[in-house]
Image (cartoon, rainbow over all chains, first blue to last red; front, side, top):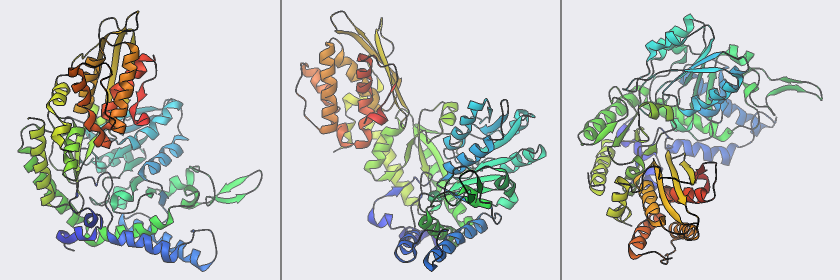
Length: 399
Length: 156
């Protein structure tokens, strides 16, 4: 597949001709085949899944379940270990809530200082039970200092939950090292893979973590669907997260028994059309091939870093080396929101703020930053456009 | 609207060199304001004398050029006014920004009127309205002795 023409497959760029979209880390735009799949399902195949016995519902259910199979193959997971949620945030809340039931006063959880709030706040809730949270520090380059993990582990450490790729610096956490240290101590590991899937290789058999969370909307799929991979032993041990239809086995006025397997965690009607269309997003990514995505995004990142760092007054968040799809920066002396308003006048979409990573920003002594993130549809002209806009910005703010 | 109209010299100047910055002496009212999505924080301090006149007013905090300039200009304009006038001014400010209503001089000098009006253009950038209004909401909270920090994300 030719990445040069891939932009044509995204209708958003036809209706917004001048749009330069650098906010894929926030949410990816949708290719036509995903939008068509949503429409096709609603127009031609819609019925609620997993409930009724008529043919339409049975076919819709089969279509829905086949996405689970597609996801399993895509991340090299295992049969029966893929749970559908609302988003990555809900996936991580599920893990923290259900795992939290096993914890007691004095137990310890280890996170990193690079976590998105979605992999911190759910664990923070457990502080009510007097559970302690420790953080693997990040250094001034923004890297997670994995060599400090061993010294943080005690016999009270119950779980380690870490980000795969930072949504601010774009740096990759050394997961292999973390998992091998954790395994030696028999500590389960949960990974927030929200920024990794569709940007780098994700092979869960090779990683062998206990939990892996990501979102559909960040991998060119519809909104409203999260994915949680969790090992079967946790599926069996965890109590349900939310209750309702679809997650029960038998109900009477005194007792309830729960469904087995992933159904136990999928109460209520799910975003079935979105899950069905997610299959097309995965197909889209697989057709391009991850290796082509990596080389495309890395070449864009190095072109962008090269051009942007030529301006005076640019400050990067962390060291801009070895980066893929995301990096953040500031124009010294101008607040990120003011820069973003100037970019917006030129139809350039970047995220400005703390990107739900206040701990990282505080550690790096930055209030806010501008984040550039890439998708398959970006090209070098996009980067030339943002450089022109930076020039304009410097003129307006008299730098 | 041209961006240079939004980021006119007066606003850039107040954004870079805010006036009345820090804690003023003997303040007897204060309030905090936050804009959690932007990360903007502001603390307004003011000293009301026996005749309910704003004897002194200042602010501390961080934010974008619009938010800092709006705070700085607010303190310059409100200083020396009565509490009643201050409340009229903040209502006039919200009307100007949110409804594009042209403001009458409401007892302002020519210079004060220019400063006050310099922020009118923010109204045409809906995503930036809360940057400009944060300090004025916080002023209202200080006058009302609100103990809980206000959140401009919720108000605007």
